[in-house]
Image (tube, rainbow, N blue to C red; front, side):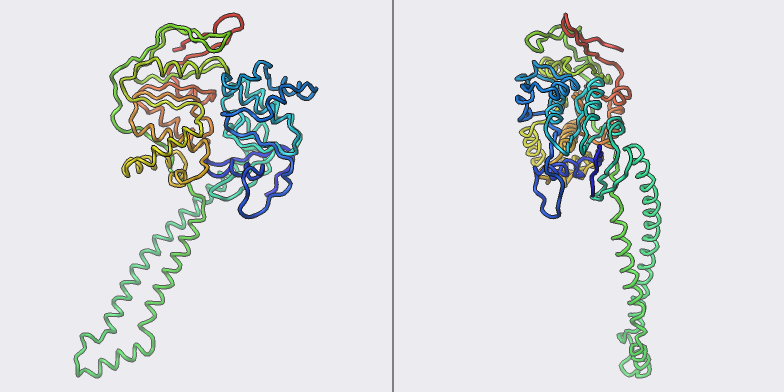
Length: 472
């Protein structure tokens, strides 16, 4: 596989190896076999925003024309230096990208660069990445970003590399045509397998009859004439023909089965919520109040309530206090019933704890969990035994684990971050049918419009507290 100058998009389901490929190119991981060449001057901007870039302070204290241009492109505030812990994940992502773009590189690799970003920030990031003149490698589930940047598209499908010299949408269209042909071939092969199975059954019955016919078991001790007939048939190998025919058919069936196995693995997608959802202890409300966001800013909101069946979509600019409000909401409300809260980012420590809890589930619960993960588009067993699961796979595991408890309230902070497109559509469809209460923060406009029955909009202001407005 060759990667050329300009932006190349790498796509594939969670766990297909996209981030691993980037880590191999950046030499963060060592390859066990094969070779990678031309990757001498590489900068890798990872998915996670848990830790600040090593070169952050140096970048913020550099006053060259180029540094100013990048800070201006990504709207980086001087006050962000030393404030990493209080920055929103969207602000952290812009800082990460600024440091990456300022670094001397022939190859720039960015992994999910629009995670956490509001619409305005997404536009800022696209403009900034367009300014890069080297070899750009982009991993993303954001269709608008993929089409805005990609000159070529590399798809990882069931371990196979497919390369298209075009944008993501056109590449996906071409792939779907190929997939349609593969499915047609697979259907034909399935029909052939059924015919072979029937033929094998018939041939086995024939072999059984032949053996019975050639057996001397029921021939009388003194019936030498009948014994001579049987010996003649055995001598001319008539008894072996049926066996050889059976063996040829079984071999043909095995070869066809292996051929079918080479077609792309397609998981059945679409999850649903089963079990009783508690309907009592609603509505849930937080009273009119203000909370401190940082030294100079506070967030004020009216009385806000959630009832059974509500799907509350939360939107607003990065840094407007959405995640801070959710954390306040989770602490403040007295939950007398089961709820599921999944934060924007999951730390390595939290992921380790999650895997430990999953390993302690009984076999029945583990079976339910495996089904949920598979229907979100991942191989459950491979995920649980993976030494380096992708952030998208960890999120799926967390969602699946939470759903086993049949929560009456689900709170999701940027649920589409890190997840592949098929998984997002599966989750969206499931949440539409969910009968409990749902609160979710998202910058994904399609996800927001398709799900929300009412909205809480967070607004920033220069001279007064940030505010929350409820839209029914």
